[in-house]
Image (tube, rainbow, N blue to C red; front, side, top):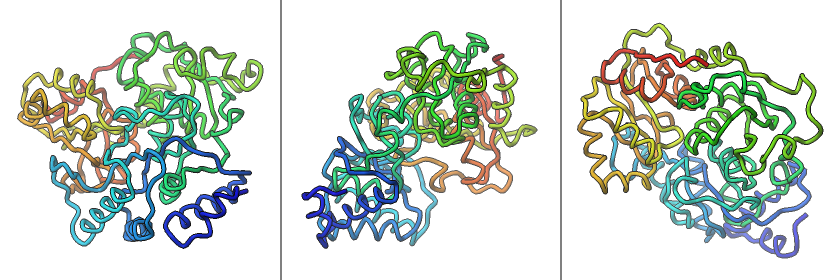
Length: 416
């Protein structure tokens, strides 16, 4: 399976040799016939989950390993920019910092964002890469048209060091064809044009298709990159979605016929989305439907873009929040917020800006036994109850802002 050059690296006792053995054994277990070169990597394994991850990264550093391709970093457990206070205590805090430093020494870019595609890391369509982080993987495959499987902790950095990945799964063109249709033409145009629609549809899509690949039809125009980001993140959270297509929007699906794996599917392979299905999916994103007050709002999973911050500032319009809005973003956006004083204006209203990490992967929000969190993120809605202990209310960004100002839930209904 390994070529002579790869075999020579694999027998080494240094960090590169260890990395090559990890990639080669993964390929064997996956049934991949060979390794393929990759153009870049996005590393999810730098988030502290325990000492083993830190010790693994430090062993690679001690072995002289360095990444062979461009490698950006997903969120860490600490906000190294100093924007927000992380409640992680010692010794975990020190181990998390050691882990982040080890990945820097391996040559990874200090991006610390779950949206590297909005921070300038955008591999070319058709290129093979090795990306971790579920939303980044699905965006890379679906919106950029690059090719990656979901690379988990340890394997992601091993691929980056070797510049190789197993040749299987979504790296192969035949595995990227759609096998079912997800038809949203029965939904109202006003709903499909709304920001609230895309996390809901993504959550429904993930539950309906599982790990299959589908093509969405019934979208009249490109919904925008942030909408696709929200759709993919929710789909990857509720299902095992690594790739979706939208007819006429995403690069591999100029039309339904081009992307389908075979002839027009039978009725059972067409999911015709109804308003009732959407209403049920939207309701399922909330776990605190009867809440009369909220304790916090959290947005930015995936990390907020500059455009989303602009919208947030317009919606707040200089008003003071009754409860904080935790706005998670990457340091690439933070720099632009500081250029035009947007950060100071938002913080004066009560927004807590968080960079390098987010509220569901490290302790930031106050620990409350009966806390209620409102969010416009399908991914936050999925993970927050288990990761933070807060019950969740799902709403649009506009409703999140109005609720934060009032301290009580506010909802504007947009009929699907």
